[in-house]
Image (tube, rainbow, N blue to C red; front, side, top):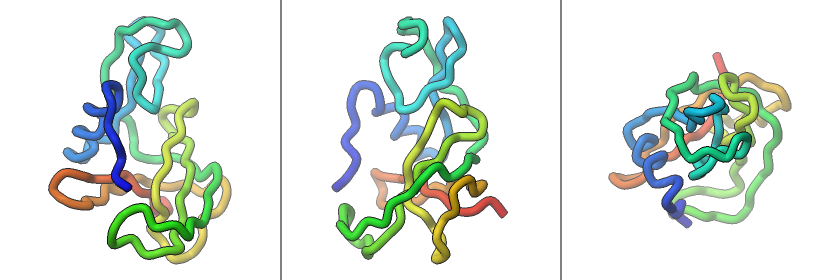
Length: 128
């Protein structure tokens, strides 16, 4: 199953395809947020811009999936939840790109994985 873009996430997916690691920053209160939304959850303004941040974080949790969602993905595979270092209120999900299992609190770095001409994903591997 491919990610489905919507009004709020379409530009984010375009930026991921260009290998840009960004979140939204509220122009009113400065809150960093992900996933992309039209309004700030803190001050409710609709003024914001894309903010590049460091592509690092820490593993919050993970699951082992036995359900294949993308053609060519072998199962089982690990999906991690990562709390972003430069935006601690934000978490992102992605596939784990190592054979050894993740560890809670482990420092990680985002990697861009090109699926095809139209889709790139953000996955995670240990910070080395």
